[in-house]
Image 1 (cartoon, rainbow, N blue to C red):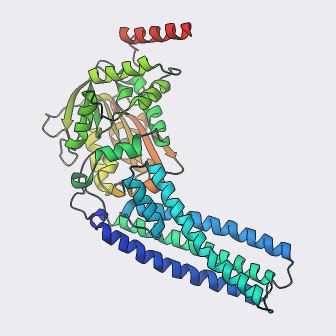
Image 2: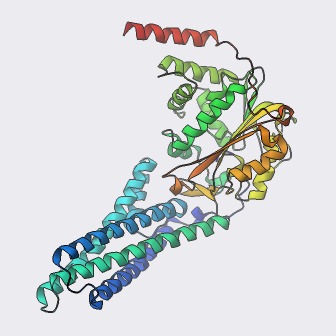
Image 3: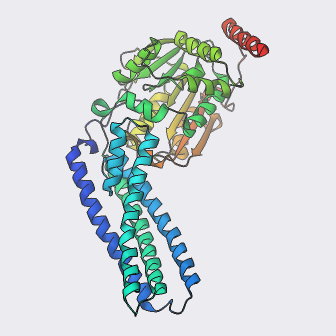
Length: 470
C-alpha cells in the first residue's frame, strides 16, 4: 500500500460525483426497504396463518419472539458490516442515514473508528424505525379484532423478525459478491491523482493496528541477522517510517525507495522536524519494546528517532514497472532489503505482482536478506473511501515466487489473520524472511553483534538515574 502506480489508467469508483453517490444510496435505500418489508411481512403472515404454532402459551410465544430478535440482530449486523465495506469502497451504501452519518463524520474530521460508529448508528436507527410499523400493525389488529389475540400478534412479529434476518443475511451476501466483482474487474482508484498521504497516515497510523504489531515484531526479530556494516534499502516506503526505525541500529545507513513524490515529501517533512509531520513516537516505542526494552523512556524514543534521521542517507525514486526498479540509479544490490505492502499493493494482477516481487528480490545481493509483508487474500484496500489495488496473494503465492530465488530452506513465512479489518479490504497479512541461496540451509545466519552506540548507553544511563530518583 506504499508504492507504485500501475493502475492509473483503470476507472475509479470515486470518479462518480457526490450527487450520483447520494442518488445511488437513495435508490438502494428505497429498494431494500420495500424488499425487506415484503419478505418480513410475507414470512410473518405465513407463520401466523399456517397454524403451526397454534395453541402455544404466552411465555413460549415470548421466547420465540426473543429468539427471533437474536436472529434479526445477527442479520442486521451482517448488513451493517456489508454497508460499511460498500460505503468505504464506493462512497454509497443501502442506507441514507448511514451515509449521512459517515459523511458528517468526515466533514468533522473524525477518525475512521468514529466514522464507522456514525454509519453504524445510522443503520441501527433506520432498522429500529422500520420495526415500528410491525408493532403498530400487529398490536392494532390484536386490540381491535376478536379473531386475533396477543399470542397471534407475537407469532406474527417473530415470523417477521425471522424474515428480516433471512433478508439481512441475503443482502449482506449480495453486497459482498458485488464488491468482489468490482475488485476483480480492477475498479481501483489512481495513485497519481487520488492518493492522499496525509489521509492515509491518519487512517492507518493514528494507532498501531494488529497487523502492524505483527509485522514490526517479525521484522525486529529478523533484523537481528542484518549485516551491520552495509546499507539497507526500504523499497516502497510510502509516506511511512514505522518499518525504518527497526533498521536504524542494525545497518550502516538506510536508503528509502518510493515512487510517489508526495510520499517522499512526507518523509522529508519528518526528517526536517516539521511540526506538522506525522508523529511516529508510539511506533518507535513499540519497536523498542519488541527489541526487549521494557517501558522505553522518552529520551530513548527520541534517541532512536535521531539515530534514524542520521542513518537515512538517500531518498530514491523507484518504479517497479522498470527492469531496474531503482529507476535513475545505477543497478545495485543491498545486503538487506525491506519491502512491506508494496508489490502486492501496486497491482491487482497476481502475475504482475510475481514479476514485481522478482524484481525486488533481485535487489538482494548474494548472502543478503529480504523482508516482505503483504496483505493476505485482498482484492483492494480502502483509504478515505477509495479502493486501491491488491493482488489477492497468500503464503503459498509468496513461497512460490521467493523459493526459486532463495531456496525452500532459506524461507521463513508466517500468515496472520485479524478480526475487524475486513472493511478496509483485508483480514490478514503474510510475512516473510528470505536469505540468499548462497547461505542455503540457514534461514537466519547470526552475525556478531556490535556494541551499543555511546549515545544509546548514555540514554539508558539517564533513564536509570531518573528511575532511581523516583
